[in-house]
Length: 392
Figure (cartoon, rainbow, N blue to C red):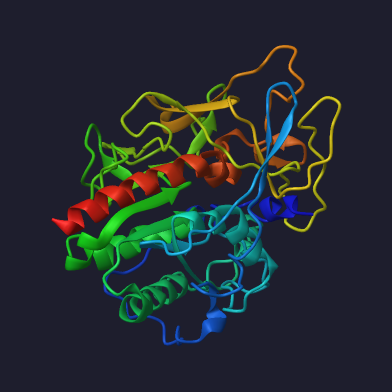
């Protein structure tokens, strides 16, 4: 059942990348009232979409199971603000603000675990839908308002600042369409403005954030640098995952940038450079490209054993390193098999359509899950550095 949380993430980048969404600077916020708690997926002190089990089954190379219990922080000192990716299956070009199962599933998969480090804020927004994407691919486009969802997020952001922030440091978290919306929010509302002093970091997953070649600042943002240390604050972490054995092809939607630019790759497992082991939280079932399909089983051990937690960990199996080569700038994920071990030596996460792996998408479906534990460690270190500087 839970693997459908990940299946719902099946085409996350499409609404942003293929529709080429852009947003005008200085556009007014939505008129929707974010004082209404019903249009927030997550807010502190509630039993909502983020108040879900995050327990994980850790599987050793010899096949032994152990359970990792999750607990949220009781009084976290910082906030996290999340914009989710393309998940809506509504029949219109833009979604509405009603919370449905796809939004709940993706919050569970990508954001709820951040409750161990911060207070959680996740607004609904009228995003470009999967329906609009499919219509465009079929050559029968339907009307889409590309600024509507962005304006919603700006309104939610301004409401949060006015009513909930109270001078606290914050982390921005997004994936795919959500990363695109947050990129514009940072550019228009934060970059070079006084509020930037409260930015701990921006985590923009599954996107090709541009910077000038060889530089860590410039391009998308004028004053916000790429994070190159766990204790660096006010910076951005961006990346797109590919198997090291299947780098981005020429038609890839990720890892590419305009002439003279390169896509940011900041490795959450080794921000300073080089390779690092991934602390991944993966789905117990096989990832599917059909958001409503029953998930196929995935055998994590031989023989297969049942898993009763919403996440699986595979310590020692996965590492990642940023690669910049003729294929682009991307986070290359390497598997480290254990010959003769009882645990699987592979993972599920490739985009598969009609039995064919779409190499240009890489491991986009599990960008967040592959790096989740590493990102939480980075946020913990950044928070210590931010709070120490705030006391000076």
